[in-house]
Structures are given as C-alpha cells and as structure tokens.
Image (tube, rainbow, N blue to C red; front, side):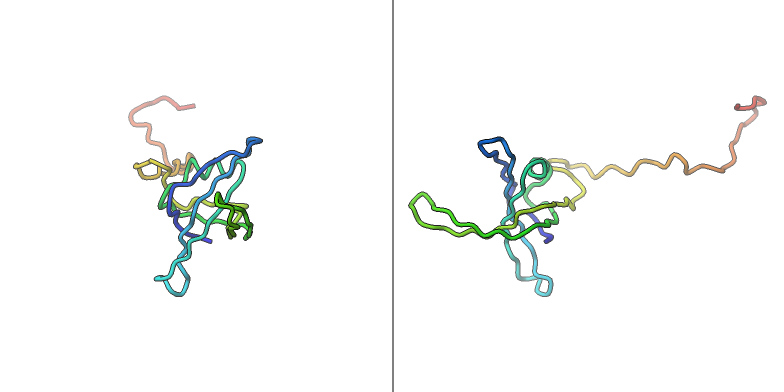
Length: 129
C-alpha cells in the first residue's frame, strides 16, 4: 500500500524493550480518487525506530506486510476487534526528513566526469607528473 500518514507515528516499547511503532495510512482508491481507506499499521524493532524518526504527519510511504485481526478487552470490559497491517517493510517516499525544511541535497558529483578531457596548463612549462 502507498499512502500518507494521518498523524505522527507513535513509538512505544514492550516490557522486554522491543520497539513498536503505530501509524495510520490514508490510501486513495485506485479507480475512485474521492474514496480513501484509512489503514492502521504496526511496525516492529529497528524499522519501528526508523519510522518514528523519519516519518511524520503527511509523509508519503509504502508499506508491505500482512493483515492481522486481533481482539482485546477495553477498560469497560467490552471485547474489541482490530484489523491492522503488520509491516515487514516500509519505504519512505518523501525526499525530506522530519522537521527538515531544506530540499534534499544534490547527488554527489561524479569524480570521473572529466575523464578524457584536455587539461589546460596555461603558460606553465612544468610537466604535471
């Protein structure tokens, strides 16, 4: 799925120290752009920390994973059912990081781009090697 985050990701840790991050993606329907699905996503371990550090509300990202349906009891004792995507992979599709207002830096210059070009030595009589 490819979509935009509806809110900043929430990073938490389990009692044994495993990182988990949750966020919701707004995914437009392919054939009807006026309809949007809101998909809850769960990410674990190092990927969870990366998502929390580099994604924010409005970020465009792609998520690959599996659908999980689970039940739990809320504070009032009522059974609740949750359907979410447990992500195995998450690709950050925006070019800037969280809080970064500068455009992405240009790619490094190719050090071999001038290979084969003539060198101007000017009036020098020295041989450069």
